[in-house]
Image 1 (cartoon, helix red, strand yellow):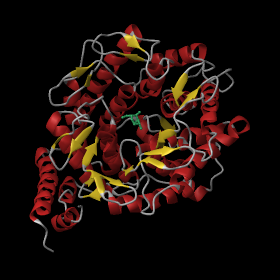
Image 2 (cartoon, rainbow, N blue to C red; image 1 turned 90 degrees about the vertical axis):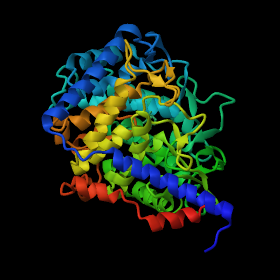
Image 3 (tube, rainbow, N blue to C red; image 1 turned 180 degrees about the vertical axis):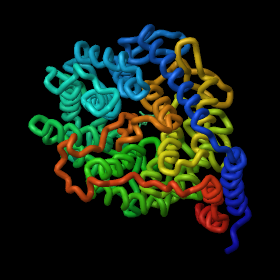
Image 4 (tube, protein in one colour; image 1 turned 45 degrees about the horizontal axis):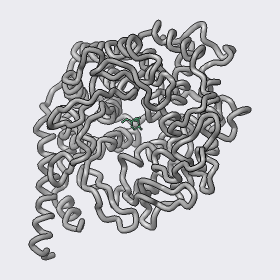
Length: 522
Ligand code: DMJ
């Protein structure tokens, strides 16, 4: 095939940039192993980072939602409802801060009420608050876990489960639309207010299967419809997929029209895809799994380029944004859950190469230009790379993922302040931002801690994390699930026989395939 010189130039740039990034990440990672004592010392360091941050949040910001890590004062963000405390409860439990875990539960039971005239994000409230309360409830109730809270039991009125249920029922009016796809915002006392935007992101509308599913199973008398509500929303989004089987980024809740037609796996879409897989693992929801696999096929066909995943137009399938965006970082972890370790390893290595360049990841990195994308220069302490390193390590036990963890710790050390850890407004200029989102405590530090805590009791049980890093046990008798036993016995994929050398070689992308794909792009 002959290409016009201009197109050939573009294609060569694509190939060079994509391969350079892969090569960079391959070179950057030394072949190291890590003994258990060294891993443990990193776990302790991460625990120390958490304790520095959490204790200062409680001292200087609580009961406001978040601590500003540079000015060291509190502010409200997604609530107000003492968000950082609620989002941190299960991390306290897993890191062995038992007294703080119990104090936190007590505070929430006595002081956090949701019958308030505040308008909140349906998505953020669900993943951070409903998810946080559910996880804390399940951890505190389980007598077989070291974080069991003896005084906490189901007869407490109200307990954390009641609180989660109350909140979820206050979110439910948002789903009352022609498509079943929820509004993005809802008032906790009055429902959806007149004039509310009728456009929502795909992830914002389709990330409810876990929390609503658990509530329906644990409280069928009060929450029977919640699971069906979440399912209708997810099914409806799936039903609006394009002819190519792609789903867009933003959707109109009345018509189902895509208002932002970029299909991708990251920002705007990520956790919708994630919950389809996790609903299968948790509830044996084969319908969700089938939806995922249908979408996955189109993702593979139209978005997957070498180790990267580029956004594409839902109708044409052509690349619109040849970017890595930081929210894509969860994808290797999801692939690992599906047992697709080779693809997961290659993509994690490419993404990790971006971290190695900046000691953080920018919100957007232009893979073709090999540069930070303007307007997406910040790093708000996101957890996705740590999350994927955690899943990949648990699935392969390959020390390369511990080594990646060391790089994440090294990057975070540079962001430490007197009272917490600051975000970066620009990963290149290192301009600071006085913001520390609650996911830094609920996810970033938790995944890192669990990555390095190689013999933690947590690993003796099976869990599904909600998208905010809140672990939900998959024990079916506890969930009183009625799914059939065969499906319920889902086992996490493992590839213990895989060696570091194997994983190094899978990062070698097939050049001819990549060149062909890139030449066809435009
Ligand atoms: C978190 O709130 C969740 O992980 C969500 O799914 C995506 N964004 C943030 C972390 O980056």
